Length: 424
Image (cartoon, rainbow, N blue to C red; front, side, top):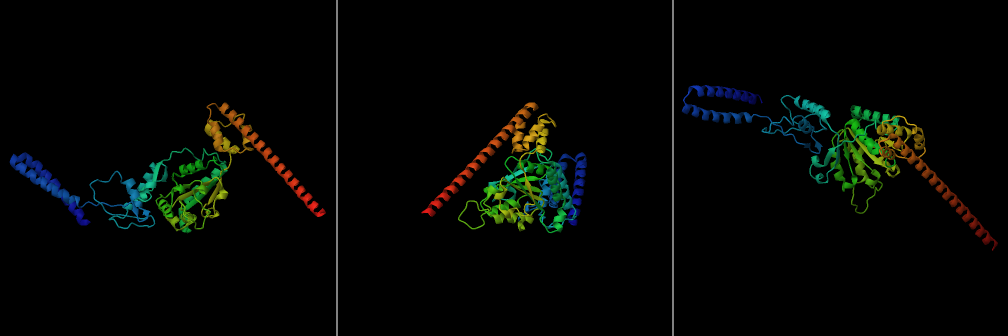
């Protein structure tokens, strides 16, 4: 390395000298002699140029190192993307995420950590949250082609969510605790991951909460549809190709896979099994990557296999139920930009007594630009819901009475038949 440094310095010194002599010769020598000197200088220039070029140090930085992504590749792509000389040759350099040191040494061993740290700061400053979905054509290609992404521009935040303020505070504190306790997970021998189960009726804000989490943490979202997969190895490929500090979402987990069926059966089109899913949640493969949040959603919690719900897999279960008075106030503030209205008390009273989702309320609040009209229409909608609920209760009560009467008649008839038999 030292010899290369001296060679490069000497070559540049010769360049300067030759260019100086050429300038002087042009003024003092005849044209014929000057032309010959120019040809000689060009040959010297080509020779010295090749000499300098061969002393250049270029790095080959592979995108992956075995089954894991190469951190150096990601850092170089961000930090050096606009600085690489197209004529530079290559040198192989790699650092798996699971190892502390690079596999080769540089003259100054501080360059790589500096580049990584600088790349992280650049990425954090310019990062745009993205939504990733599985690329079917890339499953058997390379890890870089498994996912395809689009810009995630969902406006949901914790300020706009129609959730009880205390519940929002609990969720945000839980997220902060997870992100800030990386060393704690390492010291206690646990994989740095966290699981959430979001359950409740459709339209209660599960997707909006996921978007708010992503915007709050500035994490990308990986949306995984298990019905796309036909074999367990595909699930492994998908999970291994995820970036760290990201959110994995499996919506309608109870519908995505027959998790309750643990026994071998005849051929099924979709062969992703419960054991494979559990292995990637808290098995050995769960340690390949860090800072990952896993979110399952369902409309029917009771249909999910209990094995998925135990502590250590889904750390927090969040019941997103029907709209509440506090949720309505947030929606009214977001959509109508008002905090008070003469009809709000009546609306809040009805919301406390009927089952209406935040999505239904939000839909009514966007139907007109005039606040008074919107509020009156929402009140009318809720009153009709209450009437429907009361009528349904009355019908159910009558059906229950009829069933009771029929049962009593049947018991009386059976008793009479028994008495007749005794008389005979």
